[in-house]
Length: 324
Image (cartoon, rainbow, N blue to C red):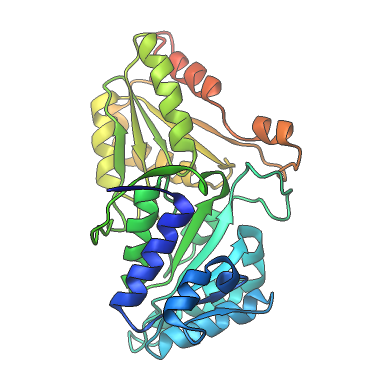
């Protein structure tokens, strides 16, 4: 184990995969400038800065993937993916199916998302659910340094396009990271805290917020289980259902807005497949249906906070809450 930041864990995963497989290349907005160590080791042919042209970057990656390369592209901020929707969703996501499996598109698209830097609405927008809804794509959103490394390695090795979202507030958080080839499989959630009273399903930086809330709840005699999805597509359905069948109460927390979000899918899944296990209504705590503010104070109000999670979980434990 070695302690490092999330940004360093991403760099380590890239370097290890580029050493392991000569077909792995990286290009995008400022990648060679941000990661000069990769340029020094692998050269300009495999690590390149590009113009600020997201559609061209993503289209080039789709073409490179179809010819046998494994491109990793960095489009900086999640809202910039709007400029590359045709190339990612309509080409990379669909052409493997349309070609009858004759082509594979092993490409990774990295983009930063989430509040914490005060960069305003045009750079901060949690749009992960857009890509979860798109056939042919996989979507990953880790919460800690070890998973950033392990999931990125798995994403690079996958034969499908993977959207790899980096919650901006996590970039400089540190944690223990395995030095060996510790690949974290896509589609596997992780229980960050076991509990018996309420299941809290979450992902990305909200995991830490939920763990803080769980500590407070524990002091109040409420035992919360915190489930980190890690992979939004494929979704770890068995892990979600197993937890809710144990606790009987479900609280879903994410920073993206509620409407058609990942939490809505989790709620529907539980309602359809584990309704009889529920002892209280399903509750979601999310960001508002509004553009993200640039003010730090307003950003804090925009993102779910531990006190709101504590209040919601406490209400769920109230025996007066109807079960139907």
